[in-house]
Length: 149
Image (cartoon, rainbow, N blue to C red; front, side):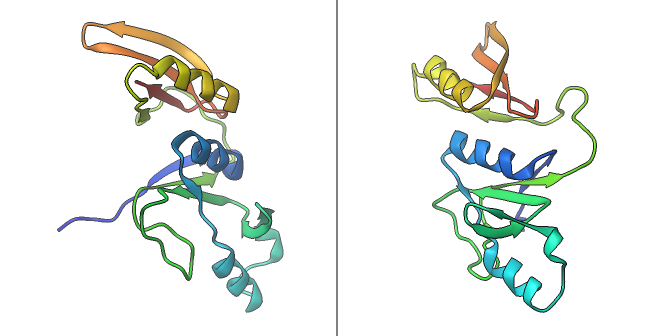
């Protein structure tokens, strides 16, 4: 049996994080407006639990990105494949990540990819050169480390 899963990342601003990672990975920010509007319509949540994002109604405390080729639920907008969900939490990130994303650039394009990500708001943490390979450790706008190989 295989299980459906998603990576969940704590965030101060889930929508900004979703925008950064969608641009970084070439993913799509999920459009959950159909389910949000439906739940709002029958009074299941107050309007304060939502925000406008990308010109549509979205959950205030959640935003997700999905691979553009993967299936998704048309009723909820939720991805059914490769997906990252960002959830608002009150505390800031502290310490080193125990899990991180590796971004694989095309051969010979690691430095150009790192430069592109810097323009999107990432920062360089350090450059690593070991017998097993070379990569750049970066941090997203909220300080979550990831590697560019």
